[in-house]
Image (tube, rainbow, N blue to C red; front, side, top):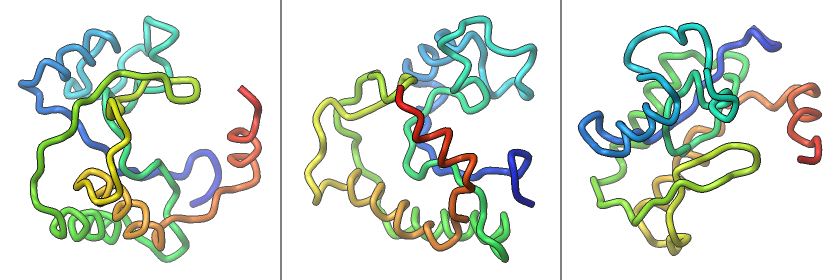
Length: 146
């Protein structure tokens, strides 16, 4: 399936549901993503972009799957990436603006050998073969000056 209705896949880090960041994210969004469907939509205009996804940090940006790629193949590849990395302590995070939305970002950019950077790089490289090239409409939307 192609076009706007095509499912998109991503790799995100989420705080544990017992962590204060989870509670803060739910309060900011005005909903808890564990409650199921999106409900009636965001009550806060600044929460419209992350409304469906919840409060998260992106490791691999949302993408459509390439021709021939499957959801189970995507999940297997994400699992393989995760299996290549030992658990590690995250660097200090902050809520920061990224383009036109809020994101969890490291306070300082981690060096290339930091486990977070290695994981993020592996998510990009390790999952890229499953990513379909962006369609013209998607490129045009992303290239609009903000």
